[in-house]
Image (cartoon, rainbow, N blue to C red; front, top):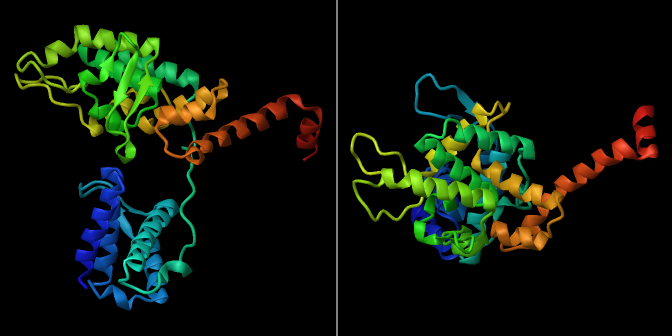
Length: 322
């Protein structure tokens, strides 16, 4: 059976599960690369030796992060290789379940899904304050918008795609709530908005957004690109939001790149440290399973070790003797 036709069916099955569009795009691209590597051969002839050979191929695979000729070639990270292999294994398991192949020959390459993990360095509360201050800067129209975006993301722990998809009608500033209609897996949720985020949103809505849509009233998107050369402001893209957060982190003097997902993790981590219940954090993040939210307890264990090192006499003694 044609491998690309099977890939199309697999993608449709992923869509039916409600997987995010970005997740589906990665799965499609990675499986397509695998099929191309096999030169489109019949998948029913797959062997474990081929799977091991493909794993070796990925270990040597090099790519450029941009299309610029001067861009350096890079090897895939270990985690990216594992992610690609896990996706191929999932595709092959789907083939087994739909009676295309008898067994999944990937069992000798990997045996379990990738563990969830947090970013290596989550922004501290003081770093978040510096990022927010840097975003507002001179309080220009663009900076008012940027401050509102980051305040809202930190207040609600929303994902970048969710932030880009917000419409003005999703906001209820009187009640202090936000309807997130385009959550992961197609799930919607209502989340509360903190006072700082509400204030920043009101500032943006009253003083900035009207100017961005002056040439075309009735635009639904909450966060808009600045109007240039008489063109109408358009919905801010995910790439633009990512750059806004990154630039705010740079202006704040943070010694590493800051991205929207780190803002999301910071919100959950700071709440957990302050005593929030894990179930409430799960609801805020939009996780369907509590074990996904439990990765944040790893941070608390790290904090506990630091506290013990500072305060427990036997803990300190052991460290000194080492």
